[in-house]
Image 1: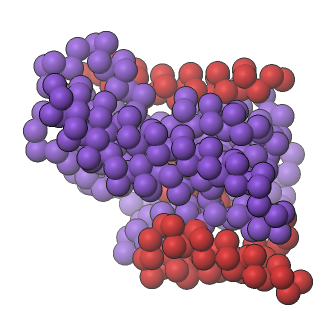
Image 2: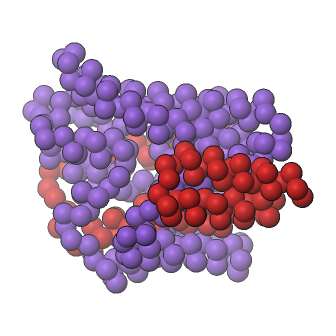
Length: 236
Length: 99
């Protein structure tokens, strides 16, 4: 039991480093949106997902409805359902239902990608090792970002508000360079999202983003359907 | 509305999306269209979240646009996430000093 846990921790370490920097940006944005550091940390601990949390904080800041919160989280995190289905085919028989209920907490893009790339069946201890280290990086990064926002001068923290979005840019641009289908999805989503802001400011931020994202994905899926292997292999 | 209720709904929905298919699902999704939509969703969501919000992320449109341009250029050359992020921040900060 100990050995796979240790191996999982090793695999989780690079993920934790990446998470630290992203969640640092999240901590900044959360505190700038009016949340307390402890609230930002609790959100990170209980959600463990960058896009969903950022959206959630925007909805809280805008005083959105709970329906809007639920709908946006559902759409933004829908990919985890597919990843869960994919991972469920790879589980060792020691992965009983209680273990599945617990390990489900840690299905993220990066953890999925690493776990899916293993050439052996997945045991619970391995998943727990990876998830615990990665989640620690995520939570500590959030705390560091929240605290930095309080300690540093306003001129600097204002500029730091762009960090999280800078990361999102760094995630979406490189694949778009070589894959015109992803470029299409990105450009359509950005245009729709900007159009909502310009011409339909009455639509709340959460709905504007999910409508933009779904419309873009559906249009791109109709234009460029993907091959079945790609949907599971290319998720990073 | 209490922030605790927001967080509860947010965390609850996020957990259920992860848990239900992982714990219960025994078949594979066959629909190519549905798979394609799920494949594009993460990119579309990140893009819709970033634009136009990034232009208002520093409290000043000019510094934000400079930071955005730097981020897009560095991302285009595939620099690591943290480098892109910190450079965008530095560019916005330095631009702010001149305004």
